[in-house]
Amino acid sequence: MKTVLDDTLSAHEIIYTYVNAQDMETYFKTINDPYAQKRVEQNIKKRVFVEDTPWSRDFLKKYIGMKVSEVKFLPASKIFHLEMNIYDGKVTYLTYRDREPIGIIIEDRDIYEVQRALFETLWSMI
Image (tube, rainbow, N blue to C red; front, side):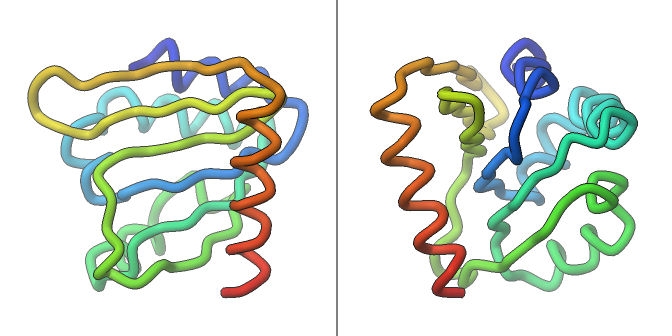
């Protein structure tokens, strides 16, 4: 999981992210806190879709990563239990669960372009 997150620290463009903030904090706080600090120090920007819950809104008010992030909220009825990052011709997935989490990096221009186009379309609609 750490390897997948750390790969995004090499991004040369904005990282487009879908994330379940509560799951991230529950299962990967010890990995994510130092990662977020490094991302802020390196000024690596993100555009992030997060589930619209009172917990998420409260958490993001104090989350260090917000210093270099723009956030839009998706309806809570659309909650997903993973993180997806789209950047530099790559798409990464991190599953958030208490056992057997999965982290993968896909480096494929076609997959990247489709996922980025879908993200940007949704971003412009919300």
